[in-house]
Every structure is written in C-alpha cells, then in structure tokens.
Length: 146
Image (cartoon, rainbow, N blue to C red):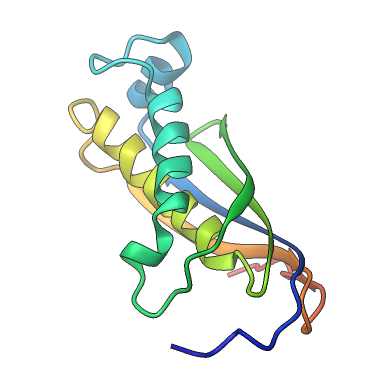
C-alpha cells in the first residue's frame, strides 16, 4: 500500500459512469415501476452508495477514505440505464475508486433487479469521467468513439 501520510489533505472529487444495456421489456418495467423485485433504480442507487463506503474492503490496497459526499444518479435512456456516481472527500488520497465502485455495484444491483426479465442485460462502459484535487490536479476523460 502506497504511503499517503505526507500528502496534504485537500478537497477531492471524482465522477464515474457506466451503462446497463437492457431489453425493451426491462426498460418498460423499470420506467413503469413494475419490476417484480421492486424499485430497481432505488435499489441500484443505494447499492452504489453502500459499495462506495466499503471500497477499501473490496479493492486490495485501496486506502480507507472518509467520504464527505456521495451521489449516484440513474437515468433511463432508450435501451439502457446510465449510471453516474460522484464521490467527494477532504483527505490525502483521491476518490476515483469510490466513484468507480459505486457505478459497478449500482450496475450489478440493477442487473439483479431485472434478471428475471432480461438475463441478457450487459454492463459496459464503466470509466472515470473526471477528478479534481490533490497533487495531480484535474482530469477529464475524452469522448471515446470506439
């Protein structure tokens, strides 16, 4: 584990995204609130927040970080659900892994909620969109066409 003890405590923020590709039937059930297991978006949102708080227990060598803010948003689109997670902290290390973990857990929870409707759902495109704070400063992902 890399030592972060000598680093300054600074405001840090990271945003990640990912997608769950779904059948029309699954999108319809999510949109109309008729998923048999319950409110799929609420469960996925909560799973992401909970997972972000446990990132250092899940990812080897990740530092425990005191998350001061966590936001997970799920947006139903034509044939997919977009997940965006933003983590914030005042700490010595960043929260990129927390944001990415939140997206991953949200996607898995959403899959679990709709698997009876669509076992062929696909989780894809999990990536860091932006980060700020710390010595390395700002990062913004470029749009990918492939």
